Structure formats: C-alpha cells, structure tokens
Image (cartoon, rainbow, N blue to C red; front, side, top):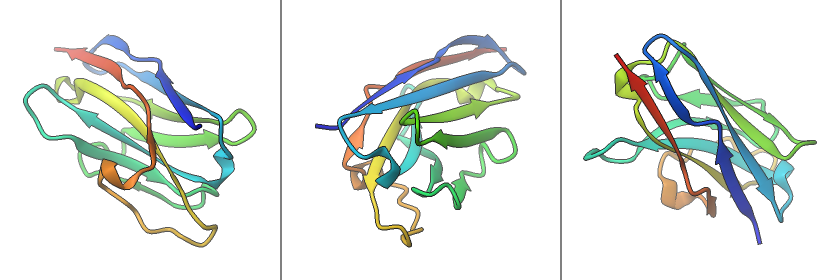
Length: 128
C-alpha cells in the first residue's frame, strides 16, 4: 500500500521561503508522476505543479510559475516543492499526489482525483 507523507509546512512572512517534502513508502516511487495541489480556506482545490516520473517534464500553474520548483529524488522516494517569494495568497493546505504512469506518458493531470495516491496535507501560512 502506497503512503505519501508531506512535511515542511509552517508559518512564514511574505517574501520568505519554505521547502515541502513528500515521502513515499510502499510502492515503486520511480514509476509515479508526482504533483502538488493546494486548498485555501473557502476556495477550490488548486493544481500547483506536476513532474513526470523521469523528471524530464514539469508544469506549473501560472500563479506559482517562477517562484515554485518541483523536484524529486527517486533514491530517497521523495518529492519536493521549493516555494520562494511566498505571498499571503499562497496560504493553504498543500497536498502531494502520485500517479503510476508509463515512461512516455507526459500528460499533465490537473485534477487530484486522477491521482491514485495522495498525502494528508501540510499547512502553509504566509503572513503579510
């Protein structure tokens, strides 16, 4: 059974940085495309970023492009989300998600329900 556990959330002032981690267990991490989503209070869940299983392809939502960076370490079975120049509107619960894919599948799934596995979320709060 695949489990994803996020960590690294917290409170930070606007302009600061945080690095989230998503540790996977119970599956072949190298076969997963990884994504991050977030949900702010009273708002719809939002797709943030995606990385293909081989790391060759990444996609970012316009709201975070140029500020956030997704990465992965297959040996450590961990995905990361480096968040820089944080803004108050980045506040929310951040979820990582994993989807088994074939090596040549680079389609970007922007809906959390398209992912077979998700973590429990980690809170990020950005104050102005």
